[in-house]
Image 1 (cartoon, rainbow, N blue to C red):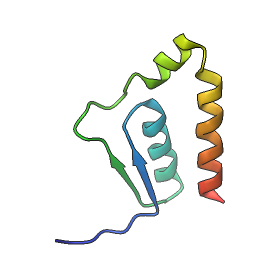
Image 2 (cartoon, rainbow, N blue to C red):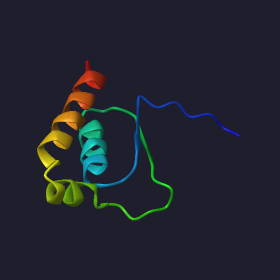
Image 3 (tube, rainbow, N blue to C red):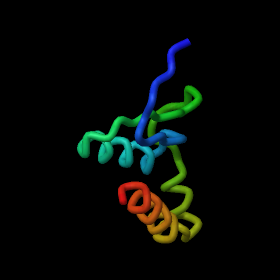
Image 4 (cartoon, one colour):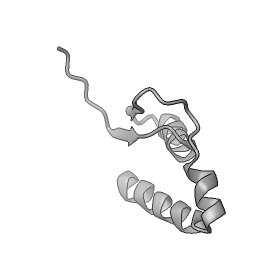
Length: 70
C-alpha cells in the first residue's frame, strides 16, 4: 500500500467541489477528490437555490476555502 500526501482533500464532486478542485489546481495545490463513484456535478447547488439557501451555502464554502488557503 502506498501513502500519498495531499495539501487539500475535497469530499464530493458537485459543482462547488469541482470549482474548488479547479481553483486548487490553478494555485498548484496538490488535491484529492473523494467521490464514491458518483457522477461529477451533483445537485447540491440547484437544491440549495430552490430551497433559498444558495447564497448562505456559497458564503460558507467561500469562508472554508479562504480559511484553508491562509
